[in-house]
Image (cartoon, rainbow, N blue to C red):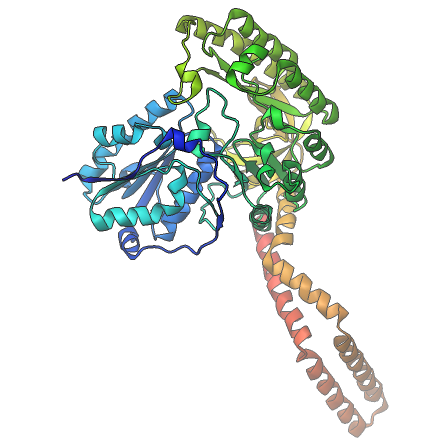
Length: 582
């Protein structure tokens, strides 16, 4: 009898299907009892490959496992459960996945109850799940990108039936809200606004692994972002395979510019987004970015090729000329805006002339950064069926030439930064040297500079003193304690204690009853002072009694009591902040 139950397997034809009946699901999280028992005292490990979307998936996976009572570990050897979260965009990423799965054979030998799951985009490819089960029989669970909200039920079913499970849904599922989440960063957060993609570029597997395009409700996006602002996050990045198509499926005029403007208005210090498709980049978007200071002037704008004929083969829906016109608009309306890109070298049958078009476009645009790749065929995509007459040697030679042109553009931007001061959001100490901090400017440039580690999460002014191609060396331009104090002040504004105090103070100041009671206290106080000088003991005693009575009425008023209590809590919070600064 087979030890593996195949509940569903990927079907690329089904993955192309557009669903109009998708709904938003809001259900409370329920942890199966068998998973609670399994999770008690157990540590979990997650290894993620791929893009920011996969990182966000990891945060949700971790949220589910922690809800089941498990605790994260960074040591894979001590894990009682491990998930490998995969990427399908590049072939080399897939090869790394197979090596990662092999590591956990030792865990199973050491602990017969060890549970191994493999998930993510790679599982959505046809044939991959069966290949993994054949090569790595100790894998307990294989599930796809659309199955993530069902993680705990799948683990529970596997445990209850004492069987391995494969469940990979190919069609795009419903949008599930109220997902548990354990953020990997305390200051920078990713927020999904769309799932899937409808572009179907001929080389791209994403529409098959992530499904067709669907947008989260604006209210849900704003609720999540507002919560992050209140928690003190300094930067939000809105995520989607193509963020600028947000809202198209609502058919009510909602656009990406709409959500961008409204999220920025929540007060997040830094707002970013990725990834944009040049075909959907509107003038309205450019105007919103230009007019909104907390939207960072840094746009990732994948070009893939500088040749119009090659772009047509890639299914990119724009021309070289329209792309360059868009770049011109952005740089005219948003001076100093950084533009980064993705470029593919060696697409099937790429000619030397087509490649040189890419070189000349890069020379003209002068990118701030570029992610360059030699084309990797993805099974199931139209491009994978194309015959290719370009040798590997030629592809690698072109790749090297492209790198030199890209680096020249990057260096020109780096050199222009010398001597200037930029605001840097500090990620924390460098892995190589704890005395050196690292962080990113508004335009996404990495800067390393000496400083105390307590500046992590602060936005600090840094002067660039040395330029390198892909990172800069800087120096703080103000006392780090002042930077921390400014950060603490902003954080206090969002503290529940501070909000309660300000609300109580406002009620106290505006209460007519309190005002009347205070007037009576002052009147009685003046009468006591007057009679103490007269020497009439009887009248003085009577006045003191009246004063105590008015004071009791004042102190017992609910508005006064609420104000005094909140004031004490606020003072304690301020003392704690002062201790930190010292």
